[in-house]
Length: 162
Image (cartoon, rainbow, N blue to C red; front, side):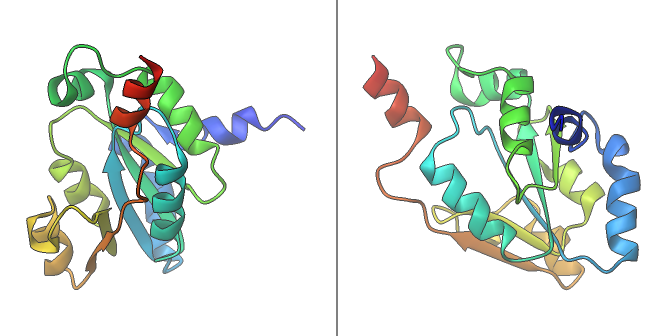
C-alpha cells in the first residue's frame, strides 16, 4: 500500500484548502484541538507534546510556520528543514489529522478561521497569554498548556550537532 498520498492529503497550504474537511468534522461533532509551531527538527519532546494535545479531542490540527515565518522568528539559520519536509513529517504521525501552513508571525487569523474547541501551547505560556485565547474562550472552548519534555528542544539539538 502506498501511504504517501494519504499523508499528503493531511497537508493544507491555506485554511481554505482545509475548510471542507474541518466543516465535515464540525458536522460530526468532532472535538477539534489546535496547536502551532515551527517543528523544525522533530524530536521526542514534540512527539510527546503532540500526542498529549491529540488526546484532548478527536481531531488534531497543527498550524505550521512557513519557512519565511520561521526565519523572522528564529533567525536566518533556521529552519533546518524546509516547510514541506516539516509538514510531511508531522502529517505522517498517526494522531495528526491536519497540518495547515501559516505565514504570519502568529497564528491568530488561522485560529479565527479554524475555531478550535481546544487551543494548546507549551507550558512556558500562561493560558491567557496564548495567541487566540480570546477566540477560543469566546466560543466556550478550552485553552490548555502542556509541560515540555525536559532536555529536548530543537535549539539544543542544533547546538549538539555543532
